[in-house]
Image (cartoon, rainbow, N blue to C red; front, side, top):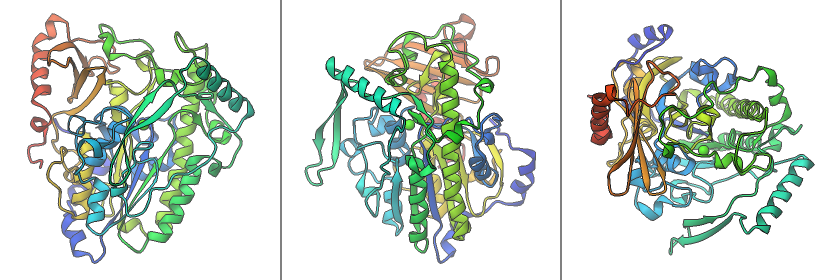
Length: 508
Ligand SMILES: [Ca+2]
């Protein structure tokens, strides 16, 4: 498989192939890392060729860096995806498949990406959402993590709806409860949480007329700017985790004003793929936990348009906050000393395949935005089609700053692609998603997505096969068609051979 590179970048690629490690080792000061996470951001951005979304700041970052057009998360939900990325290991290794399990309970001695930097003299710091919720990892950071505390909703009608939902769930004994079931005996750190019931939520979106820092992401950008000013003179790994566009879609009204409701495009395929096994689908439970969304059945007329507009408003809101942080990096003269990586933790269904939210193995949930910018960026503004994975981020950052790559990582450094975005690369990217005791293993190749739902005994319950050359939206499952039997068998073999067999020929 050969990745594509935009013609404008091709010349730069030929001209430059920089030895990052040698450069940074020779310099007296190490390169910094600005590590930007964006919760639930799908790659529907200007820099990915989507013109109806206003994401000028992320686009600018991509224009001065490199965007990965076919990057995939390893499991399409917050904590499993983030844990995999931050430990450089796949969910089968981390054994974190849910939002309750801390990896310090399953692989206690693992050295996380920020921890590795900390051990090599970096100041590492977490602002906002990096690890999921209460599952922070103090060992990763030089100083305690910081999270903004601002209101979720501003409008009285939203607060009233939230209160009604709380009472409704309480009355039926279904209100969400989080109970800590396991702590580290030495540190008291939470290792496991039992969650029962349904969370009480207000409306799925709101457009308050408030300043940016009246909401968490604005306050987070303020804090990131202040922090950069404080830590600018020492080597740093600053992780800034933005909260939107995660539900509820709350952004200041002026970001909603960027999008007219009439111009919003709804999903072209709001239906389950033909021939899809039931297990691949879900009923959008996360969205349905919001007070203005019914527990079952179709969304009210026009709600899809409303939700998509609100999601896009949140994307633009977060984009503006990211712009403020990146501008500060420039103002402080840190651009030439800092690697920036931006990632969204998984994709998102905005009605595609008749589903909302993440929690699936479909392309729309597993494909993610991933952008790198390095001071010596050889191919500025390049877009690579190379198949890449979140587990690749850990070894990539190590190589780019000249740190040793620890053993046990399950990805490959992407540094060679930064120098040559169109070079041959991985044969496949791997994701997985559990449903009860069944695990859906999914693989994206250059042309196909192939998924096997494996029961605990190891048998395959059902399979999916999508051909993006003939069916770009993945609307027809070909797995059971007799004419594709040989192809499915070949892909099954490849899936079960696993990620080791799909590494680039010269990969490490
Ligand atoms: Ca998420």
